[in-house]
Length: 330
Figure (tube, one colour):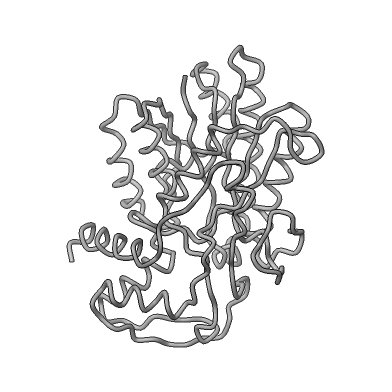
């Protein structure tokens, strides 16, 4: 049987695909390879996967209903879906909100329709795992963020689309009995990471002697989560489809975080040491859509999925910087 994986050329998607291939799965990956950031990085990620006979890639917009449903019809052995593709970025959602409407809302619906179509086959849809985000917690101030907290006060349109995706999945799980799990990712970093994320931005600027912008005068903290730990959680969710969840539907939501919030200035210090250079810092006020702190309560994730992150930033950041040096030959 096969797994349909969206966002296969993305950061988390590539790492997830590689782990699945390593354990003997057949993976059909799709990605539109858009220009939100340099497509060359996405192509390089794909190149790490395409040597496997068990990996098939199709360039495709997962918000294209006809294309996705045709793909599922042509591959009747698909019995699980990992939906990691999305339009990411809190600040970019202030500039191009319609990109988020298409990708994060229409795209979520298309993938759920694909799962619905699979339910009519003998194998059915054994598991639908999709990416949510810690951004759904929005204006919450109670720490750590718990899946039992309300999430109806988003601080960004990106967070709003991720919350909407969770609600949509709940409805499809109720209507069509699709076993579904949403995963709220907390600031994922690591090798092959996105250029719009702070590890990449800070490392690049520190290495080049350029100024980095630090918002809210550095008085922020994040639950930085290493990508290998995230992938372990994704696959645990894939392998543990829920039988029941909220209101009886087979749908659950979990946090995937490191459960160790790190002050922003401490985090920058780790990057400085890994780069062997000191940062030039321009302190700025808090940006619209940003939150002061993220901190994941992972008790439910640990209990149900056995999730136990093991990588601190003191281990993970040097691995990222090492990859950065190799990829950029610096």
